[in-house]
Image (cartoon, rainbow over all chains, first blue to last red; front, side, top):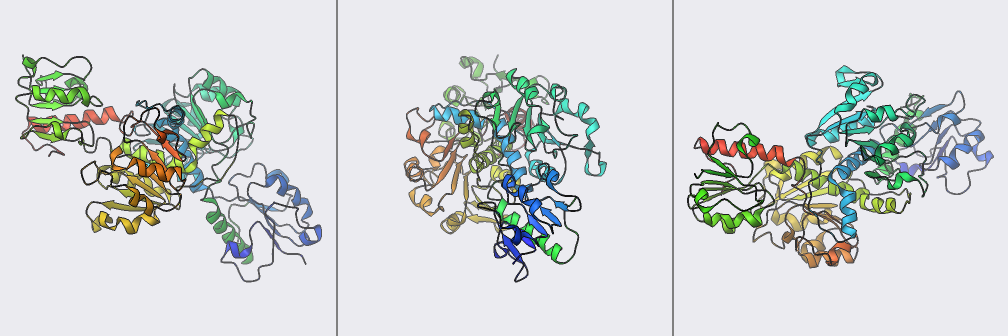
Amino acid sequence: MSARYLLPYAPDVIGGLPAGLDALVWDGDGPAPSDDALREVEFFCLPYLRHAVALPVIPHLPSLKVVQTLTAGMDDVLPHVPDGVLACSARGLHDASTAELAVTLILASLRGVPHFTRLQDQGRWSQEFHQSLADRTVLILGYGSIGRALAVRLEPFECEIVRVARSARPEERVHGVAELPDLLPSADVVVLLTPLTPESRHLVDAGFLSRMKDGALLVNVARGPVVDTAALLAELTAQRLRAALDVTDPEPLPADHPLWHAPGVLITPHVGGPSSAFLPRARRTLREQILRYENGEPLAAGR
Amino acid sequence: MSARYLLPYAPDVIGGLPAGLDALVWDGDGPAPSDDALREVEFFCLPYLRHAVALPVIPHLPSLKVVQTLTAGMDDVLPHVPDGVLACSARGLHDASTAELAVTLILASLRGVPHFTRLQDQGRWSQEFHQSLADRTVLILGYGSIGRALAVRLEPFECEIVRVARSARPEERVHGVAELPDLLPSADVVVLLTPLTPESRHLVDAGFLSRMKDGALLVNVARGPVVDTAALLAELTAQRLRAALDVTDPEPLPADHPLWHAPGVLITPHVGGPSSAFLPRARRTLREQILRYENGEPLAAGR
């Protein structure tokens, strides 16, 4: 009475799987299945947005071979994955939703949506010129799957796109991170899409920010700790830079944190992934990975 | 001491014009030039956002041959243009800025930016699922120059686009307006981009709105009177539809108008055109039209 799969959705919700797939369903609400039921679980898909209750289940899985996340980043997961167990991220799953949120944050900030929302609440009509995305230079820092999805969405907006990744890839017009100091001063918008690693933690520090041009917009849809919050707060308070942050450090942001009310900042509560785009793409990702596992093929995005 | 051109910018600001172009400069601030100075004016470019002071100048131009606007619509201008005088709109000038604002309003509304702005002002972090543009069906009503610019910008977002114009143009996948009743029920987002004409006034009435699906979003970046405000207000108040309006009827919206505080509405104060994208494109449009006029070539977008 154990099973090989522990999944957040029933096989018929995922769809396209072999009949009678040997799976337990647990979505992270309610208690986890008993140790006995978990004894033969080889493939564990962490329920989305439930890592806090799901990660402690891992030590109860003696047959574990694969931990599959439904997140793009694995920074919080990797420390919990035992040696010899493959950890797979959901690369590609969040491309549409997160790239779309990045465009949302850029456009809303430049065209003044938070400002006009506040005027609306006061019943005030005030026609003003704001910045357009057209004619701006957007630097994308972290050029993987989501970075590419963002560039594709930005291209028709008559803006310039500068791509930066850890290593230069000239065939894709991607600059290496070593060129950043020379590239930052010409960017009107800098979008962070780097995974959180020891190297990227506080990559955006006072020195990085000081090279950004006056009035430029920093957009973080990666992970909060990529940015040194105190350094950003100083630039915002001085009204030299603007920011749109879907992730923060600390996160969630406490009610009394000064970042909430800094001038020129738009904050959304980590909603790059959570949107109606999630479920259909999560089903597809999970279906593809399970079929690969069933067929003994290498899994995608493993490490 | 008269001139052939009356322009809102000096020729050297416009750039690329013949040396010594015979032009008077008046940007709508301060009094208009004297009747004597205006006696030989053939080509009058109305200063942008100054029609209220500029249109009364037209009767003082006995040599007038061309009225050039810097707006895309000419609904407010045409009644002031004498017979035999050509009126030219600024077709193309506002494509980038207005299409960009339409995408801004769609994304901000779907992804919850006004909602999250209000939570931010209260210091509240509340991760929630919102709608994505991905997987939605967007109906563009009015498929001219700006409609095409909007479609190009929407295409990478993994959404379905339905194009509707006065007449069907199958080669461009454009439906005719007669098909609207059948097309409306499947649209998640309806974007209005029709010029204001006697036929389009109150095109979006109670019957039109009743065919839109529950929870759908109406985006107006055209002209306020294309929508019957009372009918829209009823649907918003019932929380059956949502709206994002850059134009309203009346406009400007009075401080005590109930539309300001209707549920599910985002209002921006007619900023589709006014953005940093305006000036470089206005200079280009005006340069091209003046060069055509100087060379005796037909002007663009005249009627």
